[in-house]
Image 1 (cartoon, rainbow, N blue to C red):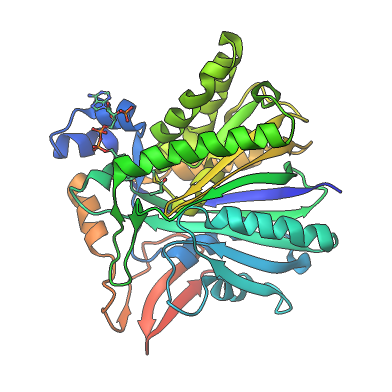
Image 2 (tube, rainbow, N blue to C red):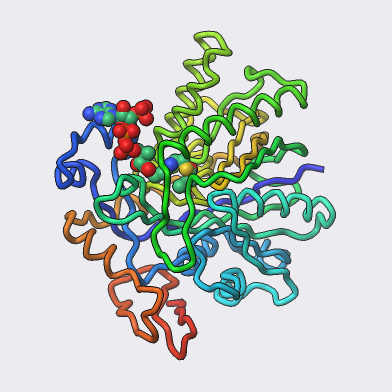
Length: 389
Ligand code: CAA
């Protein structure tokens, strides 16, 4: 049976900071940000959009009368969850009006959470082909003003339904996984910003990529030439390019060129949004689907997931008849093009308005937030969300 990604939706808030502006403000050469890091714009997340609100804004785009009642598994992958006990998936279920006869929970393993959710959902749908799963990767990627990681911030959510006979992509039965106890990126309980050993995490990412892709190809009796494109977790888009360059020497010049072309298609959106942590890999997949001009039904896509700490996984997907969707692409471009460009000082103000962990009760002004779902503040220590429809 074919099981895989049936629908995919994306949300990022309405603000961004331009990377040339940020480079000038930090007295850096803009080419370090544009070429060395591979980012042109960075999403700025207002305090009225937290992980749950963004997840709901992404998911609502892919729910319809056909799939709504079939969803009996709701998984939120996040490393910027909103509660130490209650899962964001329960809030999502309620905000989206999904069935109460569903399992709803959250998964955490740094940027790997959404992949863990997809793999679990795939096995679930294989056992229950008449049902579907909703998997969302949502995060706010924050390192703080004037930190080395500042240029790799961002945020947003990618939502996917996993179903039998999917429109977009059939997922491979097998994966290759690799994990180890690595302190490359972590966020202690009392912090809203991550701690990171950036260069070390780059090295581990590349090592895990090479290990898992080689293991996958060998175990499944495949060649690199069997893959028409590769998509990567993109904490910043140069990271994926560094990974790709590790294996390009294994193929001839023509194949190198075509893999590089597909990589460019896969990073169009991430260049403009920045890091989404758990959703980044799937924003890269969405970008490939929308922006590649050469891919066709039946092509095999290699998918590399990495979550610091660290977990790597490589698997593949086969493109299905509905992988191109001009309306989805037009909506995506409209969302990115209609955002407000903030000055660096406006961006810093917005970053600093992010609620402190001990803020107590507060009410946020949501009148300027045009998204369907907003986070409105905290009342009696309970988070308050609003749906405008
Ligand atoms: N023109 C063109 N390129 C330039 C340049 C210029 N003027 N100046 C510098 N560069 C290049 C450098 O040569 C370098 O390229 P390579 O990586 O190919 O060597 C690149 O720009 C970055 O320069 P530096 O290494 O000097 O930059 P840095 O010390 O400021 O650190 C970083 C960069 C490590 C990515 C840092 O931003 C960081 O710590 N980011 C957060 C951690 C991160 O995202 N790690 C990724 C893997 S971890 C993960 O995936 C989990 C997750 O999502 C967080």
